[in-house]
Image 1 (cartoon, rainbow, N blue to C red):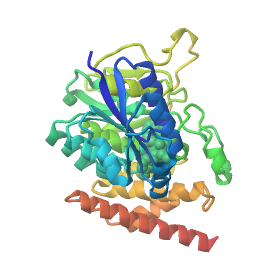
Image 2 (image 1 turned 120 degrees about the horizontal axis):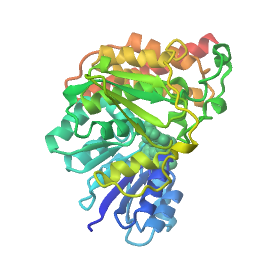
Image 3 (image 1 turned 30 degrees about the vertical axis):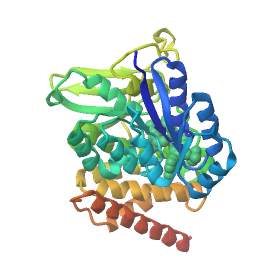
Amino acid sequence: MKKRRVVLLGATGSIGENTLRVLAAHRDRLELVGIAARSNWQRLAAIAKEFNVRHVGVFENGAYAAARASGAFVPGTALVGGVAGLVELAQLPQADVVLVAVVGTTGLEPALAALAAGKRLALASKEILVLAGKFVTASARAHGATILPVDSEHNAVFQCLEGHPGAGVRRILLTASGGAFRDWPEERLAEVTPADALKHPNWAMGPKITVDSATLANKGLELIELQWLFGLKPEQCGAVLHPQSIVHCLVEFHDGGMLAQLSPPSMTFPIQHALLHPERVKGAEPPLDLTRMVALEFRPVDERRFPLLRLARQAMAAGGVAPAVFNAGNEVAVTAFLAGQIPFLAISRVVEQTLALSDHFDPADLPAALSADAEARRIALAQLTNLNSKS
Ligand SMILES: NC(=O)c1ccc[n+]([C@@H]2O[C@H](COP(=O)([O-])OP(=O)(O)OC[C@H]3O[C@@H](n4cnc5c(N)ncnc54)[C@H](OP(=O)(O)O)[C@@H]3O)[C@@H](O)[C@H]2O)c1
């Protein structure tokens, strides 16, 4: 059997490490041919050695220079730097699948390059679709390329929709674990520290997405991602609280039938599906044991406690660049929160103000969407300065 060859952008992160577990479990089916990270070249060198990878990208200039000088990569390894290096990896002629798991929107250009080269795009970086869903999905259509979602909820939807015409779908509900503060009383949220926000009850993930899970901004980003991936109207996209993170989505059809997808709360399951689809073989981890399951609970999400979900839905309804503005404001605010510059409850205030002060036009092309993103970041940074001068 011909092995499927994989490029992994964001190899040193949480999705990256889970992908390596899947690759290690399926060496007979999958081969890693390219890897990249922002700066952690030491870990890249270890991965390159373990998986015999000869194409390596290091985004940051200083780290790239250090990697080149280190002698840690075997002779003959092609080391590339910057975003141009990520694009080169995404278009490697020998690659079949490009998994983009770079935090934030840096993966946009490489993702578009992979689609233009006709590769399968296994997409973890939801921010890319929030910023430029219109252009990414149009590029996939134009080049006959497939986008396989890696985000567990969207991967679940992909699985439930296989063989079902989209016209039959009434609405889709994504499940939300509720994050670190699901059971905290509202009055305690004012005191939340970055350390509190980084304790997720069910999932071990990178810091940005863990904070986004605590504010439910992550679910908001996922609703926008859902809309683009499956061509839905905003009112067809919803969320429901499900503390166990076992059911990942619920697809409701017009006739009242509902399909759900279940798997343990580990990213190796959707990653394996995205890499091997349509093949179904033994997973890298044991499946669910239904006889040991206590209960599966579902309850409505309280948008008053989680204003970022409400703001994401408003941005989605406004359309145009509003979702990109939401994402930009959130990225700036979360970075500031993690750096101890603003309190937890200020994250939603920064995003709300950024949305209020931005122009929500329909971008004619990608540069227009990118300039709206840059402008929103400037506005959000100015909000941080305002907040700090008031405190
Ligand atoms: N973690 C999850 O379970 C999960 C689930 C669904 C979706 N996602 C999405 O997947 C993406 C990655 O999340 P994560 O939790 O894996 O993040 P993470 O643990 O913080 O890892 C981020 C990865 O991206 C790399 N990176 C960051 N900036 C880069 C740049 N400019 N150029 C090249 N590489 C860069 C990092 O390299 P360094 O190590 O060198 O910094 C690291 O390998 C995010 O978009 C997230 O929303 C994650």
